[in-house]
Length: 489
Image (tube, rainbow, N blue to C red; front, side, top):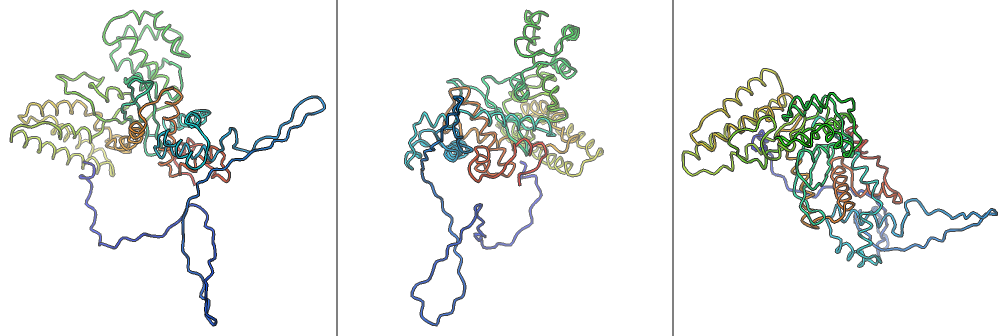
């Protein structure tokens, strides 16, 4: 849909495809090859260059003989190991293992077999330790990237997919935009779980204006909100302290709908998100997948599905997924097919106008598009199911037309679809994770690798910088580049 509504590209003359100039990323060594059997009297005309790129994969083992001295007062002085050497496997080997597993999407048995074939003495258990042990620095850097993105980005695009962890089904959520990507796997799929991810590692619960606004939006009664506001304590260190506070106020004993304890907890977590300056003026963009056709709208809380889960703060919806609902609608008569084709054509034309308004926004054009939206989605076609769908889409008018007020946000979630494909590939290759450490390491390295791609830096160079490989490139923490929205030199 997005490509179909784009302007036609000018025709180009067909030219024969050429290989182009080869520019290796490494330094080039010159080696002079002398000619043989040159007749006497021949004239030397220089050299004919012939560039060859090659790869050297070999195993090496170094025994460091560390000097050991005993001082007169009985203390032992031991010579330090070289920089980057902190285990029995060197930084170059560790970089290769991380690169092959996370970037190359290899499996642990195949990676162990590859290392054996080149002469490295290592077991599958040791390879597993190379992937998960002492990786707190990478996990923390991935969290710092998320915090930087939530603090500085005008929007974040989100999506989720199935994940397997500890023998149980779960969900992996993607958060990102053009500058960063972050993955987080949790056991449940709910708005509370998504809000917890948006806290980016913080565990506090905060009652502030944002928290109370969230509670009102999601139908928590005014007397209960007043009960919370009457208490002097507004910040709680962790979940145990917060739940004890709710229990003391009588929230947990109530059996009404919606659950007061759940809505209040969501509000306190959202208050924590805003207190840490996350998503202060940012838009959360999600798709409309997973929503069933209801009989009546469910109000401001949204419809059942992903948008309900991601409907926090300023929320926008993907137009591609909205149009897809009309496209996939089953038709059984010629009249229904004609009605469907007509509505799809109107939506496509409207989408093209939205793209044009993004490039040249204006109040008059925005007002005209809002009125045009009503004419399209309030029409009656005689096709009952299609009319119900149009009514449902019209209920999402504010979320679908967010771009009129914020033209910098995309009209679709194609970026999230592309990002989360990396996690889906990892899931198909290796199934699930068993330990929490393994889950966190997998999510962190997938996040860092995708962020490196968006920043235009090679994952190989990034790993070399972090593991202190000899002659490594200098790459600052990735969150610095995300905050400044610049790419590494």
